[in-house]
Image (cartoon, rainbow, N blue to C red):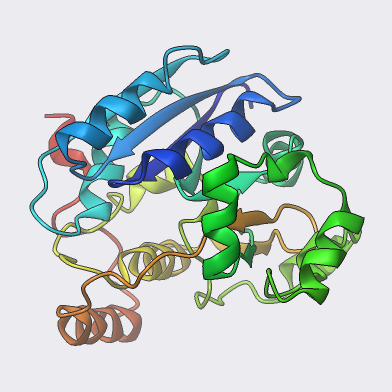
Length: 272
């Protein structure tokens, strides 16, 4: 594997995206590109976020569409269509990563598998503190986060542990739960084979789970990234969940139909 494409999704939160990008700029492995996938930020936030991309040490593209509600799957498909890497890492723009994030994902990458990483959640109050001070948490030690945990500013410490799990990383090959696009790696070929995200999932909810279920249906297995490649995830308000029930019903139907592999409205129409 050579080039990795990191798809970073953002929406109206330039301060968080700045920290996310700074953590990517600090990577030890520089053989990657960044595609910022903007799900319709307003003009003020868009100007700020685009300004933060100007000094990227790696190739960076900015993909934008107008705000028509939560369309994360759609903007990610558009970003993948613009990407060049043979391996895709999906990351939320309100996450920070350690300097070995790319290197570790590269190490974990294996044909026939997707890699689901995990996250540490920041509290609401501490997220505001991080934003106000533009704190580079990706430079901090585990001892620093131990203090934060004792203060209730983060939800857990376990993801910071680095464990050589070996074959245990593959012990739940068909588990789709908690494989989220805040930290998810997939071979580009596999992503295209299932036609990417299904854009029928409008509004918040389950477009990432649907993608993973279809990958599993086609024979791609889960490999755990926990205890290897965590992200630091800022607190944010819940998205509009008015489409939750419809999206969940569609997801359950997909889960039951093991022959359903390709998204009905997926990434392919961006290549035609």
